Length: 318
Image 1 (cartoon, rainbow, N blue to C red):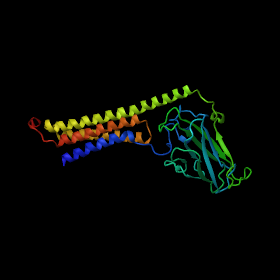
Image 2: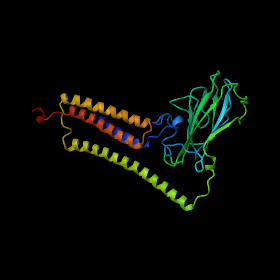
Image 3: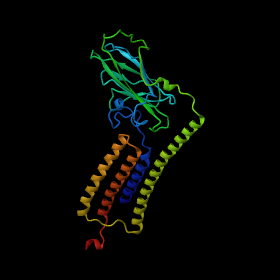
Image 4: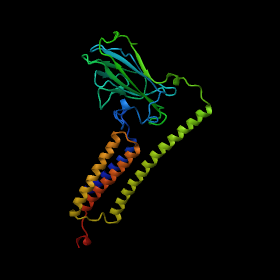
């Protein structure tokens, strides 16, 4: 039973380590980005961290004033000179009801908000106005145009649009069946029409992008491989210790119990840190480091257990 337990533990540790670099982010942008709500402060992990007028974020089908309980179909679009797809997030601060359409999802942390379910453009969603007159309704919309390489980087760009719909009867009534009620947008439309670039400059930019991709992926593969080698070395050490060294040295239970508690608390704390890094979409390096430290602490608990269970030899009884 002891050997089967040890083999199972080692296989579990190796599986966790191999899967770590492949953990994927959930669809849609995160509700919080470290500096506040993404829908308010923007997609700060993309571009240079600031909004860009090169991205035209627009929403059509917006009434000037809402009718109580009426449904409106909004279409959210992104415009960029180079990138035709991206993502978005829209929130009405819980005033009405936003319903995701095809290609969109309700935000897990705030079901009253909607975002893209996958990279795309021209999303159609439904907004149901409040069941009573609550005054003007404020909306917050963030849109992000991406270069399509699957990772947030300086090439991506985003912009934020804030707008309001007035209370019933405060403006000229709109026909709720009219698909072309109003289009609201933010960004520089002129930036969508750029002059043809120098082919050499385009080639240089592509080469720089390719080099950056190789650098980023190379780091992932290097550190992941190194981590696997470390785990392999530990497993090999365990094997040779049991095969040729007589097994782990005995540890008196009076020493093993407090040591196991300390190491267990350390492993639990590091495990929580690793879970936080994955859940909050921290850089992969943070998750890898915390994951390796968690495995190291868990291995310490394992060593304490096997040493406490090891049979004492004569010198341990002196």
